[in-house]
Amino acid sequence: MPRLILTRHGQVEGISPERFRGRMDMPLSPQGEAQAEALAAAIAAYARPAAIYTSPLARAVATGASIARATNAPATVAEGLADIDYGAWQWKTHAEAKAADPALHALWLEAPHRVRFPGGEALQDLLVRAADLTRMLLARHPEQTVVVVGHDSVNRVLLAHLLDLPLSGYWRLAQEPCNLTLLDLTDRAAKLLRLNDTAHLAGIG
Image (cartoon, rainbow, N blue to C red; front, side, top):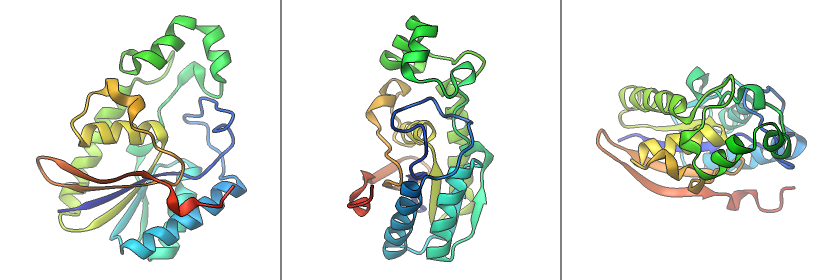
């Protein structure tokens, strides 16, 4: 069965204090670069992946490149891993989004599966991408370990899909920058081995 190493890109501007980053393309911060190197070393010590798939956004591509250098695995951009499109909310702070539409902002925090961002996507759009990615991984890597470098929202939805959980549980599936989440995949189910492990980032930032 394929083993999935799921991770999120390293630290970038807009994570703390938080903004709705989405499709805003930006480089890793110095802290993010250090996180990516530590993540790459942890993955190389754990496994020799056959392939790495990354979001097309620069922060994920750079994180994937660090892993590729450490493991000698090829890194490929997967368009389906692009971050959620926040539409009119892109790069707004939570305070700005709340001021623009208090009801929708409250709904995002309380029932995220019922939200479509103005001019952007809904979590259900990500779910379609997550399902397509899962099918591809199962078909292309039936007995191999692969790394997927995504984003907070993408990874949460992918985990919900793989673990057969409702999108209403979105906020329960935390995904910190450069975490390690491990799953074994089969045609019928996924076995979660590790979730949002950041022990390898101790002392960074």
